[in-house]
Image (cartoon, rainbow, N blue to C red; front, side):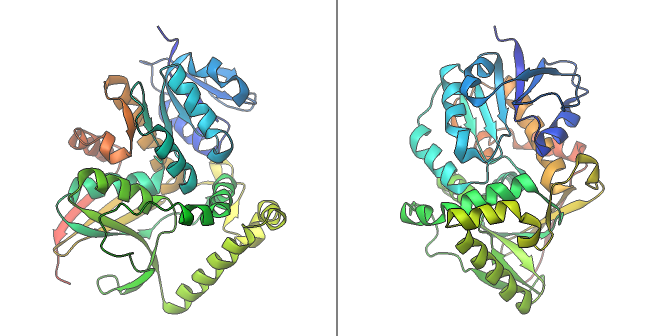
Length: 353
């Protein structure tokens, strides 16, 4: 019998602080937090100081581990191995595509625990809602509104992902349902805006899901107000990509993150985020439009998703490596109801192009 139902590893991270707030009123389950240094973590949960070289001491104590210690390339696989050896379900919020692909290739046949990755705001929202509402359609997913605040930890993970970008392309998995590669940008007549294809993990997770369901396809885009901003956005991303290829310039990106991000990235404190902010994600097919409006995307919605997954895995007998939508495929109505109870707003209507 394990001592804890859940241990949050990387509990000094920004996302962890929001998740701890989400769970602090949970009196039914035994929860602990863990990090290299637990002194600054404000919580009534048990605190366990632990470094990754002793991670088995943590995984052996809990039924479920939520790993929030990024960048995941550095220690993620070691933690997953510990979870497999100690029969502990594993959840993370990685946005590092190379790490996702590597774990999928190595552990896709795991059968004693659940591994579910990329459960952060963008990937979970696009993946879950696309499969729920558009499983018999082709659609475009558009992030039209979100928080403009980006925390330092997210920036560091982005640099790590870009560092391995060329490796992704060399080992690219071509098994997908798309007849051709989606356009880098398109113009939406509905929104009257340019759309730029997401370069993050979202489209990779979507491909994994629709390869499983085999009856729908989706592509994730972000809105850009005009063609000039589209050009600037493309240029900035290209420069960032180039600088991420070399160790010396990567160190500059890490050290001077505010300069290189045009002051969008900061080392925020938890009380500096406006929890009244909302995100909006739009799902379009040939006949319908769905809008998902929810609490502050980057951290608050992520913590809600993680809480739902934690409670789901406690009651589930499923085993294997899954995307969020595949894991929850038989419980989608229940998940949607939980999201509605957490201040999500979902609207669907017919429209003409």
